[in-house]
Amino acid sequence: MVIQAYTVYAQSINELENKPDISYTIHLNTINNNISLNIHCYFDSDTSNYTDICFFPQPNWNQHQYLVKAIHSDTPSVHIEQFPNSLFWRVYHPPNSRVHIRYDITHDSTAFNQENMHQPLPVIFNDNYFLIENASMLTIPVSWLEDEANILKQRKIRIDWRTDSSWQYANSFGMNIKRQIISVSARDLLRSMTIGSRNQKKCTISTFTISPRQSLQIAISGAFIPQYELFANTIKHIVQSSILFWQDTTRFNYIATVIPVEMAQEDVENGVIGFSIANAFVAMMSEKRNNMNFSCKYLFAHEMLHKWINGECFPLQDFSGFGYCAAEGFTDYVARYILLQNGSITKAEYLRDMNIQIESYLQSPFKNIIADSVKKNFWNSLQIMRVPYRRGDILAHIWASEIRKHTKGKHDFATALRDIMQQHSGTAIIDQIFAKSLEPYIGRNVIDDILKYMKNGETIPIPSDMIPFARVIKAQGSADIPQFELLPESK
Ligand SMILES: [Zn+2]
Image (cartoon, rainbow, N blue to C red; front, side, top):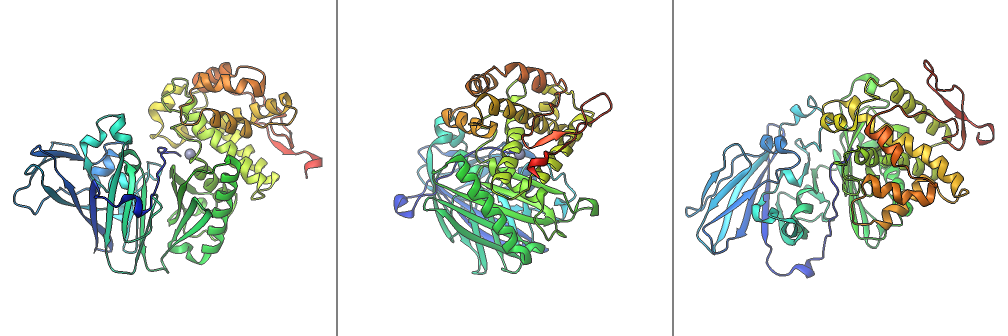
């Protein structure tokens, strides 16, 4: 799953000596075994006598309303009014003054497990641990969101954590200290993630250096602490292989979080759910899990890969449905490709999963759903949500096989995709651009495939040679679901 893409640049405090544009002081309180964050926000007003402030209204509007208690001020000269049914407030204040407001963020963690876990990034609080998207936590002046230039303008933010010393924090600005001074755009601030925990036995946060400009923070909590080494090593291996594959040398800090949740017995083995925002992912797995099987590695790789393949490079509004199929299905393809290359999974595991995906695709009652309907119902049905993943994944396999033939083995779909994304770095890749860019690798224009299968929902025929180390043992017929087995020489 991908929520949004962004990049955050944490800068050293030296670069930011002058006054912050806004600062937050966060006090942690524990109420009924749940954490509440009491947040004090300070900013300098201009010559006007009011400032409109808000929580970023997208994408988790409902979640915000659920979390945020009314905003107050203790300063007599400051008066606050909320716009009806919104997360916008007007703060009246003397011109050119320092304005102080405060509010609480609370969340009932017991309600969390009963909610739809496939909805966008969950907010989790308990008495030892919290995980929160900053969009749900930090209010900002509305003027910061006025236009593209304001949204992307770098702002200086200060966050002070006022808690006892048993607490540790990490966020996707690459900071894990009590006073965090950050240079960040409004967009990136509100789509970042913060993790806080106390009690090392219940949650462990560690930082690893990947390269001088790249770091990884891993937070593992609850029932998984005894398996910390195993989980952390798996994540590190996947992160390192992904960076290597993308030849990425840019500065970034990544946070990976693993949380145990209660799951039905039948979901213990394969029930893993992941959420990602480009510099962070959250994986939720059964608290009974004590191994790293295919499902876990695949989920970690998929979520990590959203750092590079996401709704920002492949806009989801593409009318052909290409955006969803690319952002999710291409990610699935590359996840398996990287895991096989780095030795995390075997060819047999690869095939076992592909057979399941193909079967689920062909048997889905929504197999022929049109792109428009996928877009409308994406968050309403897990079965509909899976359709673009499988369309993108299966087409990637088919194109990969053609690409290997056309380039005489020099390229695969994964390497062609990487090249295309590097050529279009920083710009959105829509269906037409993608099809044109893929032409030199594949020797034809795939726009017809995109329109036929991704947009109009025709059933994708499964070719017998779509996996290089496998052969098909059952052809696709009216009643048959094709299945792949390892070629004898690949065993
Ligand atoms: Zn995804």
